[in-house]
Image (cartoon, rainbow, N blue to C red; front, top):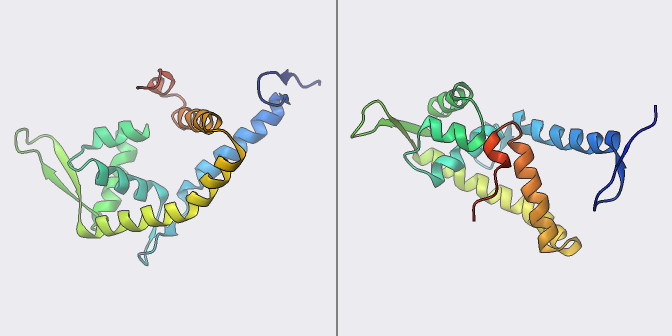
Length: 165
């Protein structure tokens, strides 16, 4: 069976070759289940540390806000939040004006993990970003990251809306 070539501004590739690239990218994304020590002596999943980072940036956020930010179900987000609570990384408080709304905050231990995660990711990714800046234009890099962000939210209709300025 002859492979159809996809034409565009990028080097021509068959759908199979493109699917191979996307599969490799998806495998990298699925590495998110691996546990890692972010410098605190305890192992955490990327889902846990990225949830911690979101809460650090949005203190008092709700389960719904976290779910929307990561394009995950409320159930999946609740599971992560329950693990974080058991590990004493977050605390949950009832909203003072509406007791039905739960607000999520970091504990001191959660704040320590967030700082360790940010430090480690910066140390790992800064050289990679610098390499990209040497090899590609700012426009190419921005386009690549825009495509990756949209792929990460594939299936979420809002991911394909025009980016907000």
